[in-house]
Length: 294
Image (cartoon, rainbow, N blue to C red):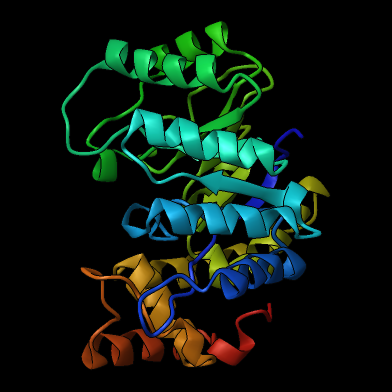
């Protein structure tokens, strides 16, 4: 199944009181975002705290993704540094009918373009059925994709390396590869990206802005006047003042207590931070119970 253009939420993971993953509620949350307007969701990834989640729980999520009527709208973010674990998780996805992945190169270690090429080549050789969105986020991985390395990967693996999520923002305005998907990582880059030929966005804050982001996307596609982009960007800028995982869980926990747990060493916002964030969002008439309203 191909990955389509559009609005994708980097979906949140729901955590139980004992710090285990609530698999059912995590899938329900991703499904709700699609109902609210997302073309698809990335389950796992950095927003889903996948780097902090055990592989056994990741496999439980994958098993549950298979049963969803929105399975073809899901992308899986493995959240692993390990080459072998990435391959194992991707093969488990394929066994469950999921072939779409968001993959960041390993964090912590220093490496160059040639070594990144080797890393992704090994994955594609082992999982040739995969459709891969490269995850360009230097702040998290320590590595920044160049146009040169992406062109090299796409030339070698045109059927497997199909797109990039650009959260470093050094690519989305200037990278030009035919039929290659480019997704900036922020609502503030959505309209500018579309005007530059991008495919949409993959964003954490789409957990709460899905309808607004979809409206901006649809208005651009239909050549309508943009009346929601300013509001969308203003909401994003409030969340950008905080750790996004902390801010999103704090915001949604006002509506539903199931969101009030995150995995250590992460935490919810402090009471003071939460109060400030909620006040700024209220000034934008953006409340938890109204977060699907345009």
